[in-house]
Length: 102
Image (tube, rainbow, N blue to C red):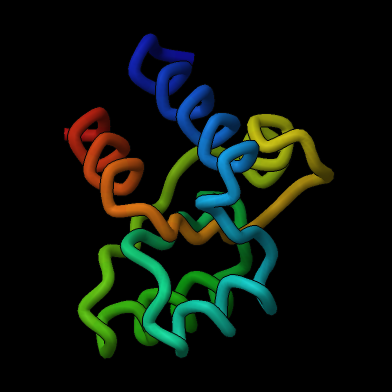
């Protein structure tokens, strides 16, 4: 795992503890539709249907959607079981994660 990837996983954990993150397909979709999210993260090993669904819904709502890491790594980083989708509510966390990817 690269240094930036470790930083991203740390940021996800901090965002989780700060209450600035939603995880799981259902919770993320609900907050996405309500306009509460600034970034959607989909695991690279999520199903093609899940990837397409969240890319399409995010694009329609002008929210960045990125593929990152694996389901188990995303889950571990937020202290939960494996997660295919994570939504970031806070613009600061979202911008920092995007900055670390670039």
